[in-house]
Length: 375
Ligand code: GMT
Image: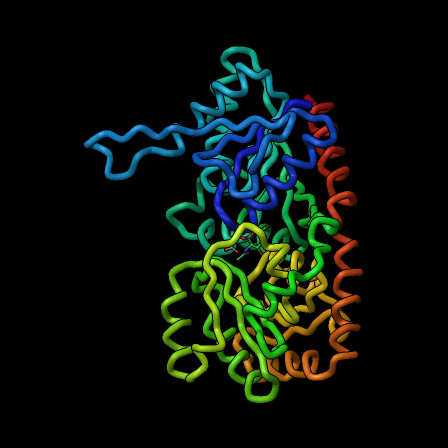
């Protein structure tokens, strides 16, 4: 098949998922065309069957806000026409689903029919999409899609709750390339972070309010009182400064490292003992799944779809949003005993296989075939 993929090119989960999907489809022999404003972070190196089309957004003194959606729709039209794409798969509804609708209508004038699949990822529904300034366009463009998927059962339910969706939403869970995350820890790296054999805790996110990164610092504070440990913060974003300030106030800043945005998550995860995810909401929690694939147990909140990837008492634990004490107790209970920690690590790696890329890609391929057959 000749497939167009539209996504955010940044470190966010939706862009990561879309890029990994495109790469896997290309490996299966499909021709994949990425359409976005920047090279996606996980799209590095030359990969046969993959093409990248950059959306140019010309500026003009009149524009306080350059019209990205218009530029995107026009690029979609151009790429679909000139590469004879058969379907368009957009990730994250805003503004990709409405730009796709516009492109679809434009192409119909030339007798070209292009089915559009929209994958909902989370905040495009639960946070940004719900905002009344976006909601009517979001609901309309989702309903105009030829197929709709959501990355968890929870997100599917949230979507029906917030919007009047007149079509079925298929739940296709996010996936991980388990093989890629089965890395041996780099000893020198581990030693540099934890020279005295301390436990290593890890959090990775975009440091937005929804992630509640201050709770990560508080949990680490409690853990560190009982168990010598270090905390690695991967990523960057608006709440980072607050997290740093809190770690200074609590006197633990020397045991916390902010390493910024990183591409080689598999190497970082390989040295970690526990992943913390304290979000107010996660439609799925792809970062937690990647941690599991690397054999890292997870302590998280029970928000959104996180329960769909967790097996409590085996690969990690969950606590209510903001319940730092409970999550701290769970973290300590996993980290305190070496044998127990190793059991959790192996079980986490084992469980990640349920969401292995090889199990999920065929579901997307089947969906594409069904959509094309209906044309
Ligand atoms: O977590 C973020 O803020 C980024 C966001 C995105 O769209 O890139 O992540 C969402 O999509 C991921 C991939 O499907 C999910 O694993 C995340 O749980 C989801 N984030 C939220 O729902 C907050």
